[in-house]
Image 1 (cartoon, rainbow, N blue to C red):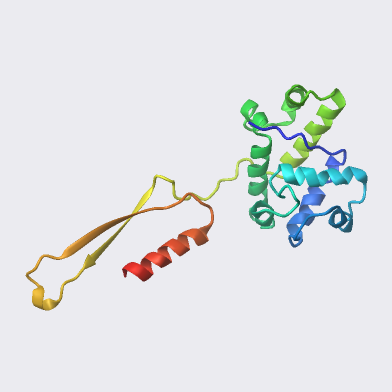
Image 2: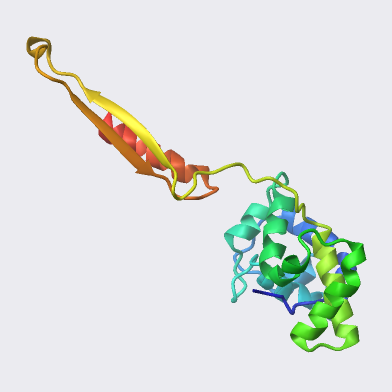
Amino acid sequence: MALSSSYTLAFAKLGEFFGKIRDGQAPDQFSTQLLKDLGYKSNNHRAYIPILKSLGFLTSDGKPTSRYIDYRDHSRSKEIMADAIKEAYSDIFLIKEHPSASDKATIEGKFKSFHNASDNVSKIMTNTFYALLALADLNSKTPPTANKNETTNIETEVVTPASFNQAPGLHYNIQVHLPATKDIEVYNAIFKSLREHLF
């Protein structure tokens, strides 16, 4: 259960701002100075940093997370944003799986009651949410990865020397429980290790 309380009066510029994040390098730490260097010098723009934190793009001390890094991949940025807002605004998605403009009043009411916010603040929170929603693809399909309960069977046989052809051979059935992850390098490392130690 979550409903981010971060909002900005400069919500109309969020699309442009996230575009600059996507196109630039990830800093060691995201500061207000970097915000100014990107061209966002207004006090209203400072709220972008708490928004990045609420979306899981930055740690509490302002360091970019793996989500920040992943967002820089243009082919996945909308999918990454969808994951981020579903996490930061999960209470909204309990009400409506695919929020649209027609749900704006309902969502505004949710912000108002959840955060005990004024009409004006709840409206700005709602506008911030919709500005982020426009950057996400809620219908994106994540490539299938191994389920935690999935097993992969790898069969190997130990072949006996020719002089022992009459002796029974040994047969191994190895089950590998693969972790659920989107990082292909994890699977590459697992199978590389299997290849080195088994074959």
